[in-house]
Length: 168
Image (tube, rainbow, N blue to C red; front, top):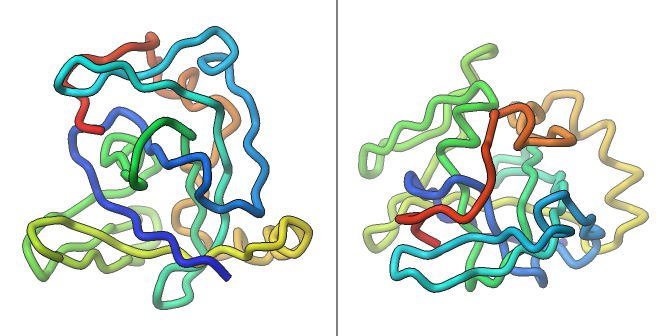
């Protein structure tokens, strides 16, 4: 198993992660990665986008979750509040009482407040075949499953990249 530390980011347009995250899950090209569209950090530097991973696993409380993560030249995994909201979730950032609420079910996932950062963790299998085998059972009770869509840009009406002021 691999435990991924995920920092909640209210300024990120997409959930992003380093290419090395969830090594057992294949990275698939997207329209943005195929056409060279990436991101722009708040300081104006360009950030490459290599494709995406549909990461399926468990939160620290062993509740099944999934997230589509864009693989980019970033140092840590950043969860986009924007994308979580699009997936039917409310994100409450209130110090040690922070959480993600799935509106349809009322289920919550705790968010920890650590050194001024809001974080949660996700456990994924390191072996690609084992992860694929378990995916259906994990998704059966998954609060984040709506985040894992085939074309998030189309769903969101997302006009493209780069984005100024994005905190990656």
